[in-house]
Length: 384
Image (tube, rainbow, N blue to C red):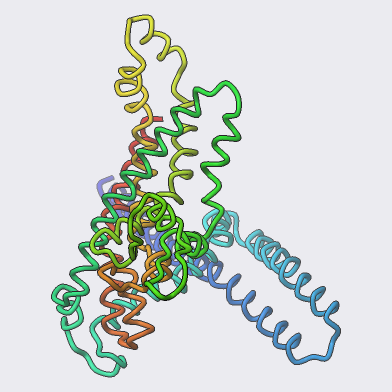
């Protein structure tokens, strides 16, 4: 009997070992299928499009035929490719299908993100340790330049001012407009449309508009056409070169982005205010709370998550600001910002190492903001 019990225990252990080996092999097989499913769609699609558009470029076909072929391959070909991959997954054993199927649709996106986001990030980090022409390693020399060069330190200081001032005023003014517009009985949509309208203008377009507002012509170079100088002259003052007036010229540039972003903040915060329960507001009024107390004690806490999201979004946009500074001043007269320095060193000064180091510093500065944003979002989802 003891021998039979020992044999049963041995058989059980062998069966468990076989199951474990089978599970490991099955897991490896699933991983391989997932990799194939993720790579197949982008590789096949790229190959088909490369062949097709090479033929279109070299052929003597009419323009209409080229357009039809491009539409057929670009739309119908991608649809057929995903349908074919889904059909191929259905031919797998039932135990593997649902493990592999999501990667047919999500996998290509992950591959493309890796090619166009992850690879450039890693390559930029590597370049930041090289010299001007990416020929020799220079260690931390480029990072030393970032934190010791006078213009770079000035750009860091200016960027910090942008981070503080632009979100503060954009969110504050947007919140005020959202609150006031919410109380309009008529014309709410029209008023909000006017405030939101600058969002339809690109940063470059807005900068060109504001160049006319800040325009200055030295004496002997014609009449003043700038709006601000026109008003100043009418009030008996002398025209001023607004964009060369340090350090206030940085504030004049910030006004442009505040003008652009206020409408965005207003729309988001207005939606959040409308989501505050009316019963809660009525109960506060019945208890004798003033409108100011309701605003600060009830509305603001209720929409704080939206305020944080809008603020962090604007901070990220400010860290990347380049267009306004480049068009208005070219980064001269003390208006440097980090993104402008990055573009200047990459493309104007042809120093890839320093440009990459600035890009890495900018990326690292954005990470904590993104982390706080994601953490806040997860906390809200947990509450819901």
